[in-house]
Image (tube, rainbow, N blue to C red; front, side, top):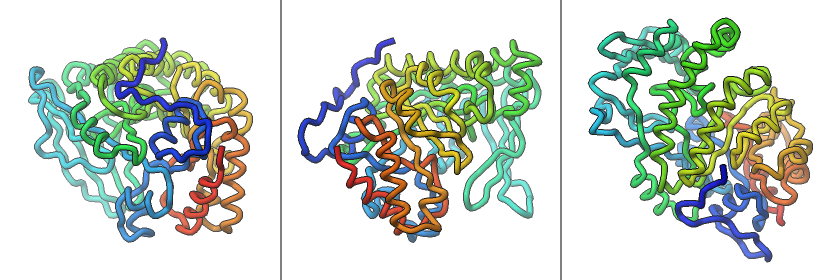
Length: 404
């Protein structure tokens, strides 16, 4: 399906001279696989732990300004459908990267603290007229994870299908924030995830709720149930994507690491991932949106398969030294004409415990292998928690020297 024209009319034009672009223009040039004035350089999520421990609690915007990176503002805002009995959860205070939760009288969410000597532990209850579903999350200073899955019985997906709310995008709020952010940087969002804890991709969301090991086994033992499950999640995301028309996002994230080649086989990708995520990408294009497909982990055996889903960009191109399998120059050769590439930088080894010169050389290596010709955004392979601020400055400064 051809990509729809952007709702705000902003498509990057080929830069024929050395004029300086804004960060937003620079990002758009890369996302449309064109050369900018220089290599766009940014980071993935700026983790609150890092800002608190190393940056005296400064804001995201202050972080980007201090380091000289091209800024990203992450935004997720929902709008309840009052005609369907939906409303904002009065007991929910949105946390990091969360939208205000949408509930109804038939889909109420309650939480309670659970005593645990090691971690903050919270049990969430999804209360419906037929059954209450529960999940438990645990957290430390770095992150949050699932310790008890929501879908414990196969019939639990029927409860989700019947009672879960269908959040839609608050287009007016997106556009208000887009106007306020202006040319400063990229406005980036997510395809909606499941309430409390989820991920943008259909397979990834299903994995979070059921567990990746159990989900993989189910593809062999009960594939029909897996397809029913994925269709339920797909429909919820389709409702959201249809509501995006007119929203001035620069790019939205889909996918997830459980769709990587270090987790699943090509056969599972072909049967259970692409048939659900690819139509969402087409639908997003029809709504005038760009999509970046996020696959942290192995990608090399899947490169062409992922590109064939027709995203505008792919990430994270994780190097082998970080547990991935990326050969950046080969990836550029194989798919660089089809998608923008985001990531590829080894933050584990070049954001700490090395010299600034080693960090600069790592930046140049990424530029030489993937940046030539445009269509590349230099970025760490996903987020980081610990880093030497001087190495971050060297990372940003060297990237700004990579001119086209």
